[in-house]
Image (cartoon, one colour):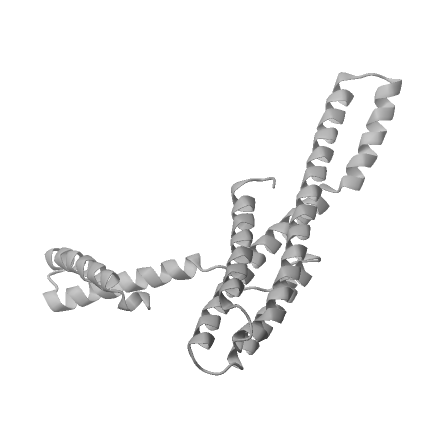
Amino acid sequence: MSHSRDPRVLSCAVLVGAIFAATVILVLGMTWPVALLVGIAGFFVSRWVGMKKSAPPPIDPFSVGEPWRQFIQGAQRAGQRLHVSVASAGDGPLKDRMSTIVDRLDDGLAETWTIARRGDQIDDTVRRLDPTSLRSKQASLEKRLATAPNDDVESALASLRSQIDATERLKADSAKLSNRLRLTQTRLDELVTRAAEVAIGAGDTDAYEHDVDDLVIDLEALRQAIEETNLL
């Protein structure tokens, strides 16, 4: 249902419009009908602006590097194949139900996109830290410390070791994410293969829907984990 047709939204719009109208009448002397219309229009404009600001970024595989790009492209291809399988099925309750299930998988694609972007951000951070350069500096400082012990050199060395440890944790996080998405792609490909069979009534629809929900729930949980914590 459209938000603009939701009775609760319309009631709220009228209430806000009435309050605005009363204010405008007192301040500017505008007539009630005009002031009320202006208030309601302002309410819907503010809602539209808020929805635009909160809209998620469009899915663009080429805005991330590998292996994240291949995960997104694989999920997109799987989604397209699923929609084709359902669209080719005969009209009826089964097709309607499968359409709902495929829409649920579209939610999974959105989750995959969010996770892949996070993985790409982690990789960018590792590249900026430049672990190779950090280890080279570490070796140099260790030699200096061995020949001429110095508190400043020791502090610098401790800082470098901390940065190196951080890059290793980030690399481990990236590997965990890519492994999870690789497993997800395998499960998604299997669901695509089963979709054509289920869409014509030759498969267990309940079991298929359950497996789709399991996959999407796993993706939602992974996305929440990476949003709530720095480490997986």
